[in-house]
Amino acid sequence: MAVVFYFISIIAILQGIYGLLDGIRSARHIRTFRPHSDWRPRVVVICPCKGTDPEFRANAQSILAQDYPDLRTLFVVESADDLAVADLQALGTDPLVAGLATIRGQKVHNMIHAVEASGDADVFVFCDADARFPKNWVRDLIAPLEDETVAVTTGYRWYTTESGSLPALFRSIWNASAVTALGDHSRNFAWGGSMAIRRETFDRIGVRDAWDRTVSDDMAMTLAARSAGQRIVFVPACLIPSHGDCTWTELLEFTTRQIIVVRVFDPRLWRVAFVGQTIFNISFYWAIVRMWTMPAAAGVWLILYGLSAVKSAIRLKAVSSVLPRGILSNRRWSYILLTPLSALLYEYNMLRSALTRDIVWRHRRYRMISPRHTVIVHGVKEN
Image (cartoon, rainbow, N blue to C red; front, side):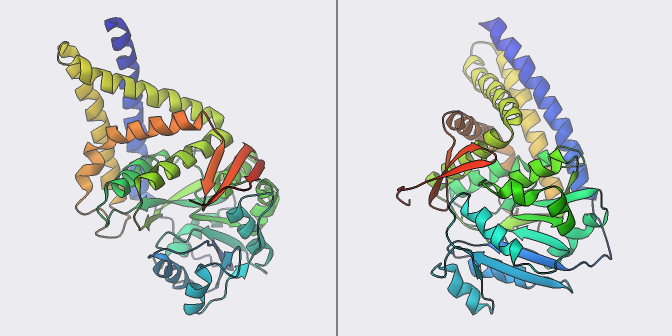
């Protein structure tokens, strides 16, 4: 058994070193990539909404308050009875009503409806209603699109932890690890909460067709861009705070849903991540068990913990250069010390995602047969 332990541990250490180097490259991109452009195309911001939460009105206001000269904002809901309608009307805007989706995810259905009502926009900007956007968000996000070799620009989310609850903290730590998967390379993916694309590119690479029967707007756009050999650029200034609390049940539902979507849309990445995560967890937690009788196991544990902690610290320093002041206060050490625990959450997500293709999104259940084939499961009680 000692031979097996050392073999797995060596692999875990090597992948930890590779991950650290990749994190350093990503952190450099986050700290230094600040594109600027005087290009001012006509922009339509499209924000699908369903229901409200305590942060909804402030989030919607942050979209309406963008510092951009030629901007139109379209909020879109499923039904005129949606709770979001009253809040949006109180802010002086009437949302579009898309109707009930029957062959695709409701969010995607809403976005298609808004695109069709977008008029003469040159650039589409898509966002989520659970994020808080700085005034220059649109300017920063569209800047790299002046280069016509760039198909999509994207930001990413950073969950805040003002509530102080453990589930919210673990959601933020879990989500933070994906930030350093983005950088100056060809592996970037679009995030639907903050992504932009030229109308001409949207049509040319077939995003509308990719959305036709899907449930994931951003992964479908990612695959469309990759299939066309086009670039996706991560804009660090568009790392957007997402405020709010969550329960343990919501944490497990959210994190598992993300991994199931990855399994369906990028099965190769899912397999690599599953194997890598499992190797780390076996080595890390086996070392804890063995360190009392095998001194070398303590060394393995320290190396793995050290690699994880250093990567987390580098990531924190990088994102602190773009996040609003105060977002990381009082929680910094949690991101460094608790990252190995989030690896257990990832393991749970991986195991669950291996057993199902069903996700629950905004109280509706979907079965993802393939990236372009989604079945809406009827008769499911809302939770």
